[in-house]
Length: 483
Image 1 (cartoon, one colour):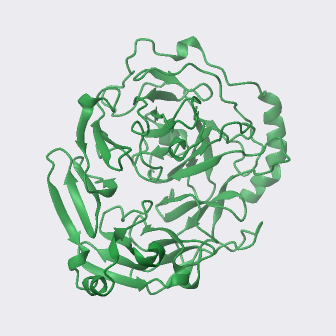
Image 2 (cartoon, rainbow, N blue to C red):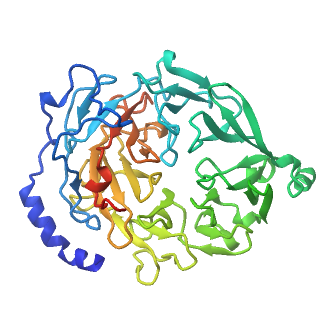
């Protein structure tokens, strides 16, 4: 099916490009703004707003082509906080939900849902390295009156998927669970007292804690966890990788990382806890070259990609574990089953046949083309069966490709992935915290990203934009009612 789509894509693209003119901005109407300042709520539907009858997403005609119809970002007035307005190109409903306060008006990263289980609270970053929890019942979220708690001694925080008041994280060698309302902390696990880990710490006292390197996650049920043990000596390199079973309170696997294997971007568990993911780089050695999956005992290792790039783990439309990642050998974003049958593409421009991996979206890096892709990207696969791809662009870089300055939603159907435009980003990135880091919520009902409205790039003064999805967003992206 994909080969057939690629064969017809040039003709489809030519016809669509002729039908949809390339002009300076998609345009915005005065009526696109709700001037009352009140969000148009649907009664009983949490986190959604009222889309007009007949609303439909704009589907990307051929995601595997670099020359889909472009929708240049329009010039629009800076939105007021709490006022819902239509995206200037795709008519999705956006709301600015925070005030700019340095980086304190934004979430942390694309791979983590910043909202708690019932979306009543949100986790935002602070410039002192801690995090702030705010209620989301009024705007701006980061108003002092909405502040619930400021975290202390917790790294890599993750909301509990069921308990809206529970925040999990790391503190040295401990896994902790904080009740953000009462302030109560429970130490779930102290690895410094674990019989498998304590002897290592006694013989290597410079090891100072456990980490997933900020990008990894536990299994969705929080049973299985994977960590790096890192020491201060030897240039802070990873010394060990471990896998722990919370139910049995057992370190299932412990792997000593050799010096040549130390180029590791992150570690974490697959969503269902079937395997450990190790984000090795291409210049690593031994068992940990490129993105690698391992069994929970850390005895069997299998390389599934040339290197580790921007990625997220998730579940495809059939409920299978996958990682969605930029492929720097082919300049596509690929969906890779977390399976020993998945093979890496090691050569530039290599063939997909027999690899088990599925290209879902082309990144058209071609400096000589008028459709050259000029952006960086992040991936968020928190909602089952879907991933969000958000892009960010530097000052002065031309917006030429269909994906530039865009958020797009990918339905992770292994038979035929589909991609839908969601919105423009209204953002220009000169510093790290100005990257959009678009994140989709676990239930898929909302998307947030960092935004400076293309003003003062480099100042890191950003706020958060929220896109609320329609009530029937899954049906609008091809899911039948019985799925």
